[in-house]
Length: 126
Image (cartoon, rainbow, N blue to C red; front, side, top):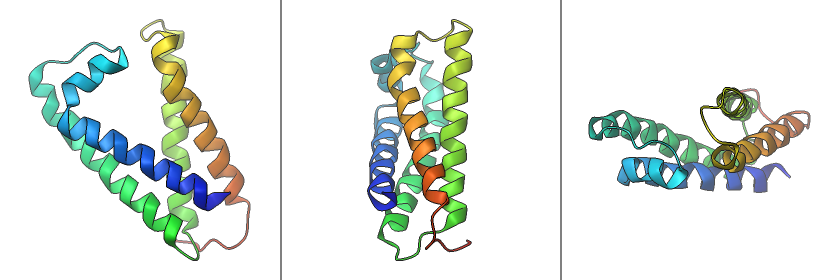
């Protein structure tokens, strides 16, 4: 289960990287969020660099004979924080459920899957 999950997460991170690097402001609009001011594209692009690095990292883990427990737990933490943010922003009425539902569901499934896989053997410590 771990390898396919890592490939799916890698793909999702790489898609987010492409969108935040090449169409950052439009991406917010497509998501149903308020389109930020043009100069915010700079910060969003820097976020895109992190999506790119994590996407490549998850692909490398998926190819590894013995994936790193640390990096799997690290991505589980990112996904758990993403889910928590979705719950808070929807709960406060700042983001509609229709906007947050798909990313939040992905975050919930990715977190649960990664935590489940952390229980297994065959992972290296770092």
